[in-house]
Amino acid sequence: MITNHERPRWSFYATWILLTSLSIPIAFFLTLIVLRIITRVVGDVIYVDGVRHITEDYLWIYPFIPIVGLLTGGLQYGLLRRYLPRMGGWVLATAGGWLLGVLLIALPGRENLINEFLGMSLVFLLMGLSIGVGQWLILRQRLAHAGWWIAANLLGWGLLGLIRADSTLDQFSLFVIGLLPACVTALVLALLMKGDPTAQPQTV
Image (cartoon, rainbow, N blue to C red; front, side, top):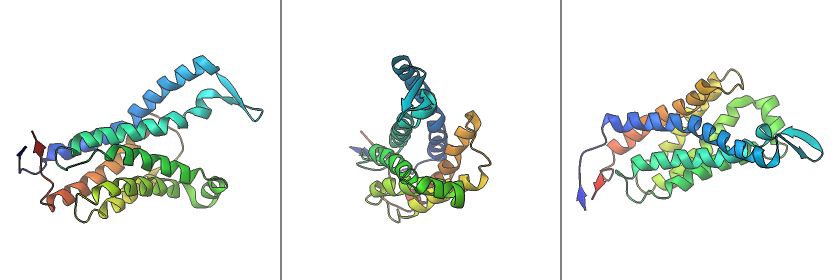
């Protein structure tokens, strides 16, 4: 095992921002493909408790969350594995964070409370908290002061709640949803890896 003692260069963090930002629109595109297959099997509409729903609108969240969690975690893992040891759990931790955030938001009776009184800001904060904590469980054994990672995700996702004007999802908004957390986490990751002597490239 040969160790290169150089720190990650600026291109590492630029790539982190790019890949993390693109994860959501790519996952959305892959979800559309999955939904197209589902609609061919079950039809364009489905009935749930006697209520008629458009299949794609009703089911899209179920494939999207695992896809975006695994895709984001996989792309980030591809970058981190060269600098931090034993990062295999990062993919599952990221996917688990996405899933936990959605479950917290969708708890029975919680959705109306969020929408009517607390607004979308809490929705994004819950997502940032759950993803941040999930990834922190991996980082805390590899980087000193890894607790800042939770704060970085809370800030990045919290900013989305402040600037989000409506619920319309298009290509631009999907990119922005990933861009703000990506920028904040890239900055904090740079500070954490700069101050940790174990964050060095591992190459064979």
